[in-house]
Structures are given as C-alpha cells and as structure tokens.
Amino acid sequence: MFFKTDLKKDEQTSNLAIYYRLVESYRDILGVARHRTLMSVGRMNDIKPQQLWAIADGLNALYRGESFLFPEGDTVVEHYVKLFWERLVSEKKLDIVRKIQNKENTKEWQKIDMNSINNKDVRELGGEWMCLQTLEKLGVGQFLQSHNFTKEETQLALSHIVTRAVTPASELKTVSIMQENSSICELTGIDSQSITKDRLYKISHKLYSVKQDLEQHLSQRTNALFDLEDKILLFDLTNTYFEGRMLGNRKARRGRSKEKRSDCPLIVLALVVNIDGFIKYSTLFEGNRSDSSTLGEVIDKLRKSTSTIEGRAIVVIDAGIATEANLAMLVEKGYDYVCVSRSNLKKYKDIEGKTPVYIEDNKKQKIELVEVRTEKQDDHSYYLKVNSEGKREK
Image (cartoon, rainbow, N blue to C red; front, side):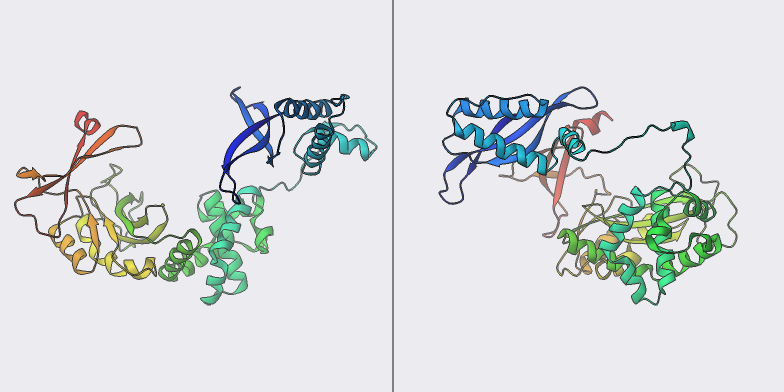
C-alpha cells in the first residue's frame, strides 16, 4: 500500500490543496500492473513526506502480520496508522480482514468428501435479477396492471420478457428454460409448472395489443430516468425472412432481402432510435414495401410516441428514404432532417469565410466537413461536403 496525491480546489478558500488516496498494486488477468484505490483519505495538514512513508510502512506491516516500530516520539504516524487500519478492517477493504475475522470467530472445521456432494434444482439468477430490476425501474409491471392485466398475467408477462431477454428461444424452449434452468419464476412469484407454450403465445398476443402505449410509456420513462430530450432521432429499416410459405401471414411478401434470401417471404421492421440507442418506436411492414414509402406512416405517430418535449426534432435518414416528397413532408410536419443527398451534386461552391471542420470516426480516421452552396439551394437547406480518405479508398 502507498499514497497518491491529487490537487483539488478547496471549497472554503478556493485555493488548491493536496488530497491523499491510499492505493494498492495488483496485476490484472493479463498480468499488467495496475493500481486500485482502497480509500480516500482527504487532506492531512502539515504531514511530512517521511511521515507519509512511515504510515504506509506501518499499514503494510499490519497487513503482513508483522510488528511495527513507530518513529520515536512521532504520535502523528501512530495516530494515522491506527485510524486507517481500523477503517480498512471495518470497511472490509483487504483480504486479510477475513483472516482476522476467522481468528476472532473460532469455528470448528470438518473435512468433507467433495465427490459425495450432489447438486439438485440448480438455477441461474444473475441475468434474471438484473433484467427484472430494470423492468421495475421502467415501471412495466404497473403499466400492465393499469391496462387490464391481472396479477398472474403481469407475472407471466414479466417472466416471459426476462427469459427471452436472457436466453432468446422459441416459446416451447422458453417453457423448458423457465421450468428447469431459470429462477425467474421464483423472483416473479408465478408457478413455473403452470406455464405452457400456449400460455406464452396468449400473453405475447396481449402484450402486442398494448404495444403502442407500452412503447410510449417506455420512451417517456427512459427520457425521465436519463434526462433525455430526443432532439435527434434515427429512422432505419431492416428485413428478415421466413423459411416457411407463410400463406396465412398478410405481411409476408417477397422482395429484396438484405440477408440475400429473396427466395423466401420477407417482413420489414422499421425502428426509430435516439442517439443513446433507446428504441422510441417500432412497426412491421409488408416484405415488399419500399423503404421510401414507410416514413409517412411512422412520422405521424413519432412525436406522440416518443417524447413529451415540444419543439423541432432532427430526423436522420438514409438516401433510400430521402425522396423529395418525404423531405417536404418532414418539413411540413415540423421536423428538421439530416440525410445523404440522392442527387450527385456537381455544381456547388465553397462559402467564403467558412473554415473546414475536422472530426474522427471510431477508427480514428479524419473526416473533413465543408459547408457549400448549390445553385438550387433554398434558404432553409444546408449542404455539407464530406471528405473521407477511408471512404475514397473503399
């Protein structure tokens, strides 16, 4: 153990003062030497470097179980060694504390045959507990009960959501996980033996019936928890395929698959997320729906479903969605937008007095942004020329 110092501003005098931390060295799993703070000491007025070293030596000696001779006549070192050691023991900061407690609480130990131990009804808890705590913070249980879910239906819905989040699987496999591997039923209070795949299908349908209200509740709840305003929203689409013929599914259609499976019926998923990654709105479209035709249906529900914050939001879309009609519709409905221009602009000029701005992507590659003007540009438009060496090489 040793001390580290930090310079901080004293709140009373507004002067810089030295604050001390007691730290220890250790090696991580890769063998790299690192430091870990055991406790923050704060200020030690008029302490001398020799006294600071003596305090660290005294604490290390106590940790090793050795005797330590305090400097003759130096009551300051003795005081701090006893004070810090008592804090380390009471706050259980060191492994040695467990040895001390075992000596104080003398116990009788017995040897056992490890091969004779059998485990029965072992269940996983960590992921389930974390997910359930998250749902409670989001108020999902209270929301479901306020939308005519009975207590048992609420327990079943929460159990189903958590299990599918921890171990994504089919309804049939999820029943087996809940009954044999997971402790979620003990946490929610529902009888695991009463759960069947048909009950999971029914509760999924009931959850989908309140999907729009639930998304709005989750959006506003996450905004309140994390102090978000949703000023920037990202809209994008993806699709996935069915391996069966899906003759009874009205939205399963053949189209261009992003997974190179255009031989299968598809379904399109549209998502609106904010810059923090929270899903604000989702909907399903027919598999043959073009990207540009989806924005109109989503945008009407977007502000109502995402946030209580008034004012203009910026919608980020890609070039496939950024038709002239869609851009005009966004402006008409009170949104700003950011997109890649669908037209290959050639007639443009730099604006005098505007200096380029340089940023880096996640690969630390430099990107140059330059504001330009075009011949047909109106007063409300803003064009950026983006120069990227990485994109040019690609």
